[in-house]
Image (cartoon, rainbow over all chains, first blue to last red; front, side, top):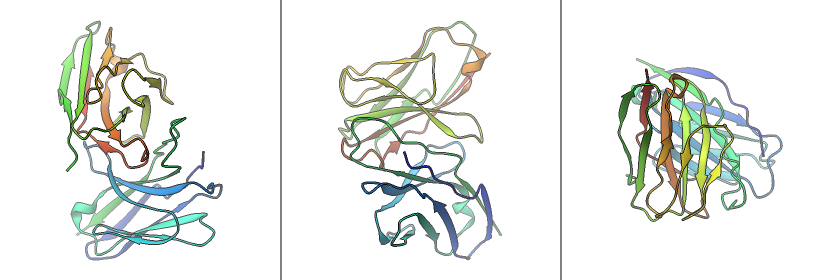
Amino acid sequence: LAKTTQPISMDSYEGQEVNITCSHNNIATNDYITWYQQFPSQGPRFIIQGYKTKVTNEVASLFIPADRKSSTLSLPRVSLSDTAVYYCLVGAPRDNYGQNFVFGPGTRLSVLP
Amino acid sequence: EADIYQTPRYLVIGTGKKITLECSQTMGHDKMYWYQQDPGMELHLIHYSYGVNSTEKGDLSSESTVSRIRTEHFPLTLESARPSHTSQYLCASSLKGSSYEQYFGPGTRLTVT
């Protein structure tokens, strides 16, 4: 089970780009990197998933260097509504023989006006 | 939007009562999960299921039990509620080969007095 480390909290201002980095030094060959977003009093929401290089969708971009020991979630031009907890998870999506889905404490992003 | 539902959304109940938290999904997902989360704290996996008649305990020990008689339904039961069970309970589901892309329900906030 690849352990992840991310900052506990971050502050940003509206309109700025926010980059949240996650360290996963013992990531395995079959592991993917997945990010979730959780608003207060709601369940987490899947944001993006990647294996290597760069993945982009309508919500965020995920940058993964060649050694895959870290990854960076990039949120372009954040707004107040992006205030949430962001979780980085690492594991093999096709793992059917064990549940190694651990959310951890996540990064609490506060977007200020 | 994901089609996963939880009822009730809020429940206040006295000590010693038996309660069942309902979770249903209409996506045909094989895997379903129950998480427990206290306010501002991490999510902890308490139960999961790979499919009908399959149930497993998660990382966090829980006095609750679950059943999976139908693919779409994954109820959680507490035989005798205690104040220590006060928490938010989140249900999620995923496709069999995509454990890391989970869809979460809105949660049930349980208060045991």
